[in-house]
Picture 1 (cartoon, rainbow, N blue to C red):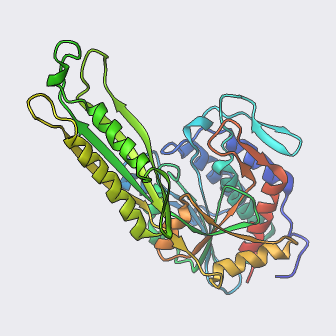
Picture 2 (picture 1 turned 180 degrees about the vertical axis):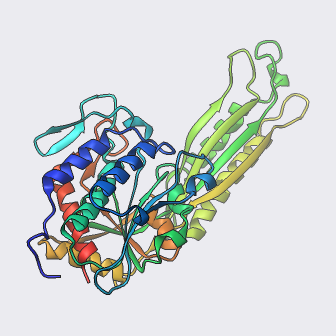
Picture 3 (picture 1 turned 45 degrees about the vertical axis):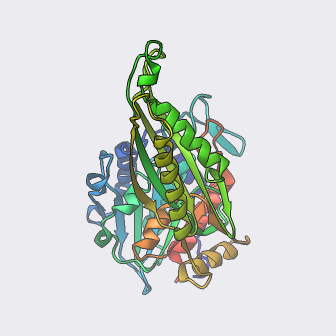
Length: 395
């Protein structure tokens, strides 16, 4: 669409919304306050209440939660396939208590013990800024769906359990998350989550340690086996690569008791589903073998229980995919060079694409996400808003 007098976003209003949103508490499962802010701003900006809806994704989520995904659909004023713009509402726990403070072109939390929450309140604000600009200036646009997903940070659960019928059957989609605004992520790895429970046998660690079966020893042997055989951390086997991590371990209450139970959480990732299955199989084998290596004096051994689930499947879009071509055109129309990328982490786009809606992800200027050093680059964030407006009004 050719430029108009209202084809540039209000950069100060965009900054106002992101600063407000980053200061709202809302870790995964507790997104209601952030969603309420978005709804109030939309209604105040002229959105009809009938355009706004929510689903029950939280009721299908294993962690529950306060609310489902927030959706607004705008009827098109020009012909064209429906487009969806999305971002996730939730932040990670380290961002609770964020106090956004601007210093020059950067924003970070004034509280040095918290993250900023730009991941992903910046994405939330990109969508809100775009929707408000369209409502205010009544710019021509095809049918649009705006979707603010919940529970992205705990396994892409909002996108996984979204009510697809509520989205209005978009043909191409654009998702805003972390990184630079001109980076177009067209693929991402697949991730598998594993829960491991090790049952040993308690005994007095001083009086009769040989009678016990140490669940900690079993865990240690299994993890050491994975490390020594190249199945932990960065994994390279022939032409295939992936990663795995034992990220959580808990067990034991006292040094004078042989520990009888350990709980472990681990993950496996790869862009190749078959190779990811090999990683999972190696993890399971290591723990089952370790159980046999720790018998007590009576010849008894412990037990291991392993459960796993697919968090998200890997995907990779063709450069010829309409959403990729549209995103490249939008970035180029603003005088920038798009950079195509493949992510080694999961994105809401993994599940949206699997639902049959090809999705390219773009950044909003966030850096050092999930840490107290997190920042938001204001100029990059404002560029992300402008790119979103281009994508919302392209025909």
